[in-house]
Structures are given as structure tokens and as C-alpha cells.
Image 1 (cartoon, rainbow, N blue to C red):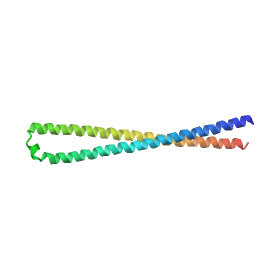
Image 2: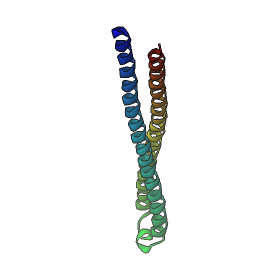
Image 3: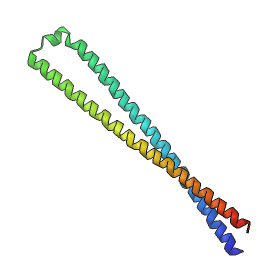
Image 4: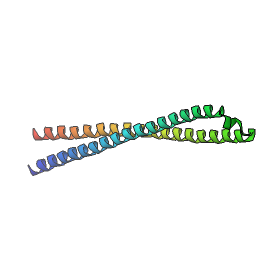
Amino acid sequence: MVAKLSYLWALETEAHKSLINAGTASVNAAEKRKLVEQLNAEADAIEATIKAVEAEEEVRKSAPEYLALSPKEQYDDQQASAAEKAAAVTMINEKRGLAENEAKNATEAEQVTKVLRGRAQDSRAFADKIRSL
């Protein structure tokens, strides 16, 4: 009788540990999903800023102050603008890449949650069978 109770205790303990771990994995997945949304929002904001700056630059290129610049100064201005845009595009790509990796991590954490909940259910089902003996 003591062995049976001890075994049931171990099975129930294992089931609870699995549920705790599943809960932690679920929280981790939610945090990763939130991070994915944040990274994509940041990338979207940078893209919107690039478009706004490009529109401003087109307007500025027809302004008398810009037209008064020497060809060398205009070229240097265009090169600086292109370098800034390239840096911004690199940031966008990095953020999108991080978001993609975090989305994969979130999916994996969700799968872990399912597996751990299944283990808990299996432990409890087995404990129920032992109780019926």
C-alpha cells in the first residue's frame, strides 16, 4: 500500500511539474510573440520615416537653396542621404530577421507547451489506472 501511494505521489508530482513547465513555456511564447510585434512595428516605423524623408528630399531638391549648391555639394548631399537610407534599410532588415527568429522561437515554445501538457495528462491518466488497482 505504501509503495502504491508513493508511486501515485511521484506521478502526481511529475504531472504538476509538467504543468508548471508548460505554463512557463506558454508565458515565454507570449513574450516572444509580443517581441515579434514590437520588432515589426519598429521596422514599419523606420520604413515610414524613409518614405517621408524621401518625399521631403524631393521637395528640397527643387528649392532655391539646393539649386544654389555646387554640383559637388549636391553630389555629397545625395551620397550622405543614400548612406543614411542604406543604414536605415540595414536596421529594417535586422529587425525583420530578429522578428522572424523570435517567431520561430515562439512556435517552438508553443509546441513545448503542448508536449508538457500532454505529459501531465499522461501522468495523471496512468495514476488513475494505478488507483483503480
